[in-house]
Image (cartoon, rainbow, N blue to C red):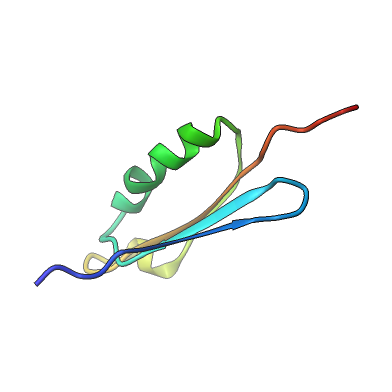
Length: 72
């Protein structure tokens, strides 16, 4: 039986997007969220790997992608 995968996305008032993935094994979470990073077109400001990232059976990672800044 496959485990359930969950992707939680938050958008802050300043346009910064953060997301966390759960239920993905090992470093595959980075591959699973690559499409989102590319779609946002932003730069990854920071990445925090949870303890699940280092486990073989379960993984998760939090990533923050910055939105475009408006200097006007």
